[in-house]
Length: 483
Image (cartoon, rainbow, N blue to C red; front, side):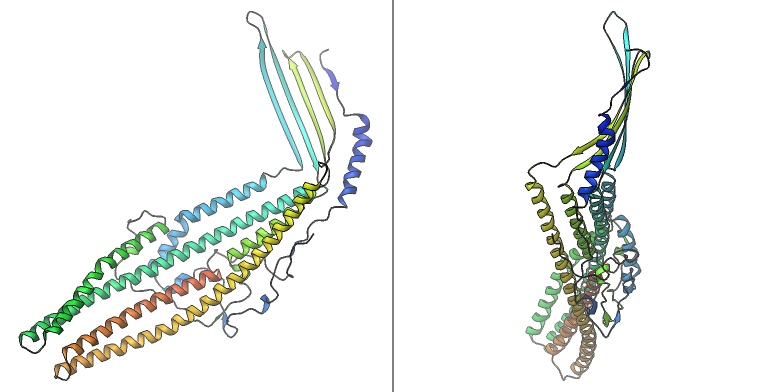
């Protein structure tokens, strides 16, 4: 072939001109047969009027740092560490990166490809020839039925669900860390009470022995005092182990090695108490504030988009392709080729399997809608029960404090009566035992109040993000996907 000779290859003049126009017209005409699925944000009919405490002021869902209501700087420091270093939260953030990247993997309507090859070809003892080839290709896919558009919608929805999963992971970290901290201070309080009780019982035992020596007490009182002292001493090792195990749990939640030194090891910290009135309202913003509901809603949206993808597969696909290639041997003999033309891909016949895939997609969308409803109902149940539990813990706390104060007054009076001979040593031991039991009850009540406060905020969704998510569940009618 002469140098610079051009080898032109068409798919046919008719195909390029009238054929292409006909294929385009055919595809556009078919697009009228395709009806995309209309998505409406799901909502329960009763949601507008839902409020767990209609008389109360709505709880501020923008209170993203609710744990500060414990007024405990050590807890604030631990939360700051965990939100940066927790490995579960780090893995959730990485899943968002992957989900966003998956959106970019969806094929673009227009794509350009290139290829360059250079080879040295010959035989031993003879001259060699250099062969080179360069190709530049263009592919444009017409998408009248919205397959790619629906794929992008579905992928974006999954990406948004992954972002909501980060918020859910953040809430889980807050929940576990704050609960562990409440448990730690409770167990430390129990350990302090037991050590104080040991000192008190040793004094009682010494006093009982003195009375026995003076024949003012019977042997039974001494034996009872010794038994109770041994019982309290037996509790110390277990409580010490509980404290160490809880510190290890906090270390891991904060992204540190178990047993490492951290702010939770500070001594002398009392049990944290929340400062939040129980008279709060739960507005309809619950829907936009809980990550699990947002995840479920986005997955439902993705399932609706998948119906459009399955329906688009029922219709032909049209693409326009072209390429320009340059071939050269020894940089002397060269050819330039190019081609351009449409490609029409018809769906497989019969289309029963493809139509069945559409029904599968519709069924999965209905399942996603049901899952969303179940998630909302479960969330409302959790919030209602958390409010009841928190209210109950506040009422119990005031009663427990009053009980301890009265038992201490009774113990003081019993000591005075005993010194005047109006009470027995056994009565004095019983009074001290009542104070001990009441102290334990108060510590347990403070613990329950703290745990219920944490559960209430987490179940409302407060603190799931630095700023509240934009409302995605506004006003719409309930929707179940239909054909």
